[in-house]
Amino acid sequence: MLTVVSFTGFTVFVALYVTYRLRKDKMNSSDDYFLGGRSLTGVVIAGSMLLTNISTEHLIGMKTVLLLLPGKLPPQLRLL
Image 1 (cartoon, rainbow, N blue to C red):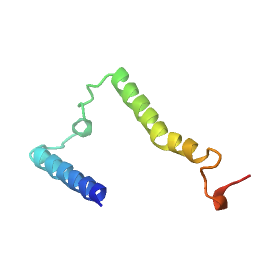
Image 2: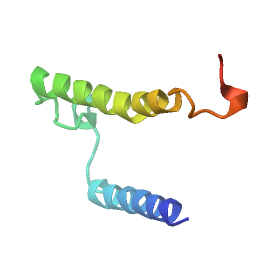
Image 3: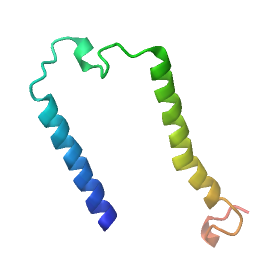
Image 4: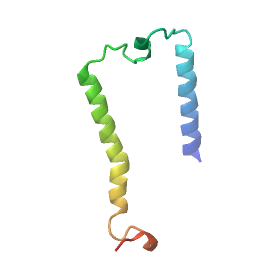
């Protein structure tokens, strides 16, 4: 229960903070919608994509490997 409350509270906090900080910004061109104003280099963008992929692999892939170890699954989910 504490996890759900803390996650919801933090999400609401971030939404309110971003709304407060961006309320005066005018989005008149497509450049205004980019985080770095199109000033980020290819290395930064590629690094961000790489690290996102790695973190997703660890978050989902490693948990799946642990579930598929012999003897760890309930009998109704075992394939062999």
